[in-house]
Image 1 (cartoon, rainbow, N blue to C red):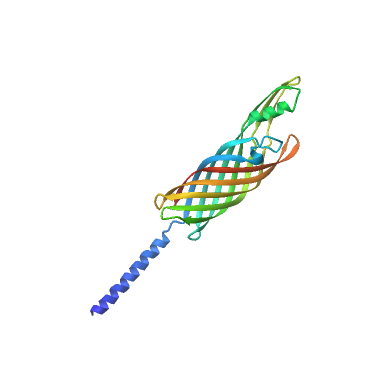
Image 2: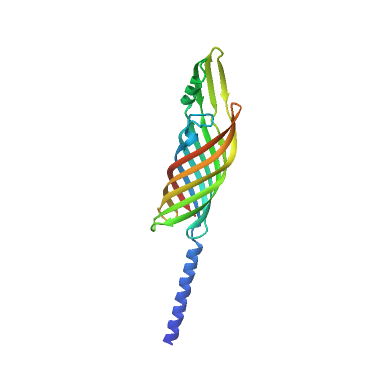
Length: 228
């Protein structure tokens, strides 16, 4: 009789543990929402002030919202909404315009900022360092809307004039690589630091000339994660 009771207790304990494990797996958090903010640094042609394809871009701001779904222990897929704004070096553009037009007495340019709004789909891979820290990499592909900065130009000469110049906006293919180091505060919240590289090519008509605007941007900042 004691042996029978012992066997029944063992079976009951095994079933109980199995049920608890099943509940734990089912309740695992699969989604992560990230809010990111950082500083952007333009590169190459986007930063250059040399020719018509130059962006005259200065350091700017990046804000992003993305949500990802865990497909396996290390793999996931994410959707990213990115917004970048880049101030422009209007003084350099005014100086160049004055130097290339001897008939001008002075040139004043007031300029807004370039803006980029992108939508990307990004596979991601994570490597756990311990039970709190992990490294994550993303490679995103999608579309970006690039709005060039509007310029307010005043020229003093024998034929003075004022002009508002805008090249409008263009949609183009874009990609982004991102690496982050993250810390799990608990099962729900986390913090991280990231660095990313974003690139695209857009074509505009600038002063009647078809111009390709190559855009390369490095961003670095912090991110807040919410797991659910």
